[in-house]
Amino acid sequence: AAAASSASSVHDFTVKDASGKDVDLSTYKGKVLLIVNVASQCGLTNSNYTELAQLYEKYKDQGFEILAFPCNQFGGQEPGTNEEIVQFACTRFKAEYPIFDKVDVNGDNVAPVYKFLKSSKGSLFGDNIKWNFSKFLVDKEGHVVDRYAPTTSPLSIEVSPDSAICAPFDDQTSFPDLVVLTPWIFAEGYQEAARELL
Image (cartoon, rainbow, N blue to C red; front, top):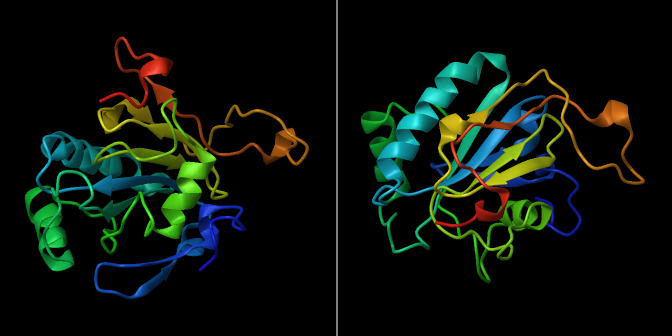
């Protein structure tokens, strides 16, 4: 597994699945990813899990994948074992996307992939994840394209895997490298400045 400081993309990391087996995230090269920290006992659980399943069903055959990482750091709202978490998500919400090992997303024991995600896309109020169901959109090359608040509806994230993305240029970026994703936000009254507000 790469250190967050030396990684250039999500694909540089290895994580553990719910059964404790290593998963090399480079296996997701060529797919658009939505990475979400999930919880089973949150006020946002029903709406997010329901809409994540709908979003996945809509785009799963178009090179889209959701990666769910359980986390118990916010109100102790994910206390179960990995087996219980997977059973809950798959039985109650028909989750067909991968659910990984429980992780810390903030603090001294933050999972390296989350350290990388946060350093790639901070928020107006700092890099730390604010609550359950924060979302990171990642393009086919493993680069973080956007970050969404816990309260952002998954269905407001319009994934278009074959479209070009708009991104700032830098010394390492040329136009042909900007590939594969256009996130459109349709939430009524949505304001950039409020992206990480609960």
